[in-house]
Length: 356
Image (cartoon, rainbow, N blue to C red; front, side):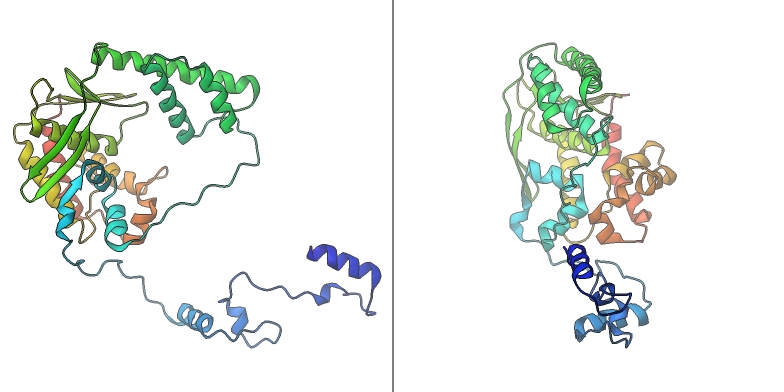
């Protein structure tokens, strides 16, 4: 609109100079705390004291940003000792995120990405996983995936025309093969009724519901490569299953992924293992718990810090790029001795109960 106005003024009016009407325009800076507003120039000036302080702080102070947490938070309220299974799983998905959201009320939710202005010629990893997951749900209940093609097209994630259909059929073949592997684990037997949880461990109480249980195993599946988050979730559910020891229910758990299956054996000391995780949960409500699923599991493969650092700050999908980790740790490196101690304490029992 400004360009149209200037064009109109240039056609209808003149002040006798060659710079008309461009000289009428004052180009302001993008931020009110730009140094240009406080440089003494007449054209750009500001009377904002707040912006002035921000400029002076940026120009004069050269102090590194300190840690977000400088002391322990107050002891959590006792009601947080009663935790649902979903909340406990969410805590170990990202302890720092859970701490900031639950105790401080900080939410760093990502904005919805802008719509693409170009047609896709492939599927990005997240869309690929979502399509596979939806396909697997259909295949496991015996439904055809034909209608899913039209729905996926409508979402705009598939390439146009024949190329999109070919890509869809390729994913369909992969999912069908993966579903056959899941059926081989369950033996096509009907699943058992979900288990209602009300487990007391010391001063803690865990409640919720465990589903996805068959006569021979608790089964979790993910049509993608195994992640640290998936393994940790299975371990927590596996411990609760073993702690309940309900008659007619299994004490073995399996995580099926595209790169193989993880089998967890029965745990005699399930109560002690749960107490360890709950104690870490309690301390993680006062200060950041240095357990990061991807980096911690990378470290546990050979107890090698190089692998952990690659997962934390590697070239692709770095775990350290998570906004909650960025806020809490900034440029500092949290992969220290405390990280090693916490990771070993949490993952040693899990590794001891993996079928080799």
